[in-house]
Length: 150
Figure (tube, rainbow, N blue to C red):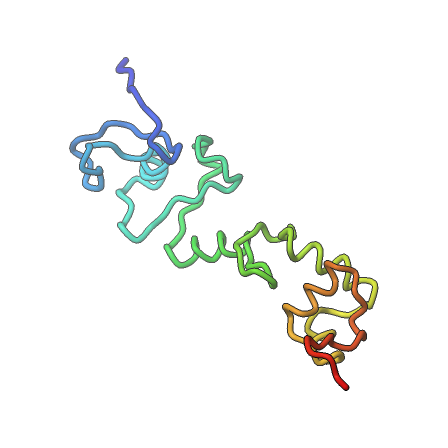
């Protein structure tokens, strides 16, 4: 019985030394998940094929947890799990709110409308609505001028 030694790479994937493997990296290591899928299929994987861990645990290399995908399909799966914050544009998890977005949504519930609807109704920019909601200034309050009118 030959014991195979494996290590984790910097991304956390378990890699095994296979110097003769056609897709071994320059350090002669291959991801264990790739080797398991190749053994299951009875062939080498193509360079365009990617192994996806269904439960997102990259050290769980059971065949039931592995899925063979094309690069485009794999990107679509991971892009569905994230979205951009509608206020600041940061990438966040799908069902979470960004701190800025959370504040705006909480305040906009008082008006029962989305920020875009408030922008149209009050003819204000997104930044002005944000500023007024954070300072608890009513949206229908007239804009303050910096100069004194006579």
